[in-house]
Image 1 (cartoon, rainbow, N blue to C red):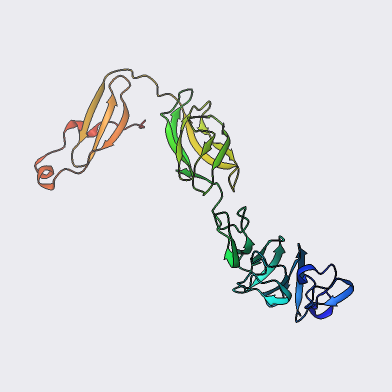
Image 2 (image 1 turned 135 degrees about the horizontal axis):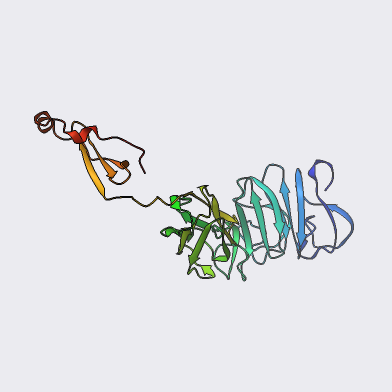
Length: 301
């Protein structure tokens, strides 16, 4: 290319690949007819294409498989506009097929498709007009839920398992490389090494705190997914074992309120206070507080 986007070519000119309107070999540069504003040129296998600044493209030369994109298979010794193509940002000539990247990041291809090089989901034949490449989403890990909280768990004991569904939410096969727990958490599963699109497997996760307080952790899933690794955040709290009771429990009703206290008769301490709901007003108005209502309140457990 020279100033103004004019294209000049030289060399063998079989099938008119130099664009000067002839098939005559040229040992010095000749101008491709009618091309200006070119920003990119790609020449292969007797066909040449140029991307123009306005987002269109012009091609010339061999056209046996429609690789010039003008809707025909007629060889063109002079440039012709690629039909149905706008907003192209890049053009790539594969010899018997051509592709262009559009500004919206979609791709269009035309020409020979014997090996599926047009990206339309099939093989064989050819297309003499641009065809939009069919893009399936790649493999991707989806988790449900996306985080877990085990809440309070006695130190040194193992929680009831919580389940997480791991799903391939992409359009291609998902290869699972590793599923690794961190922190005071364990994970078991029977996931296969690969998951087909839309299929799931289940992770069973448990929490065994080794100390008091908040105990964070995670499950790290490594795969061939578009995002890898994927991390599942985990949370839980280590708590102390409740002390043994000194005596039998007594239940004390507080009339006029909606609470019942549970008292350890050995320590005279309130073990727990339970909300049982408000009694009907008519019923409460006929009752009188009993001695139980003045029972000493203590800390709950």
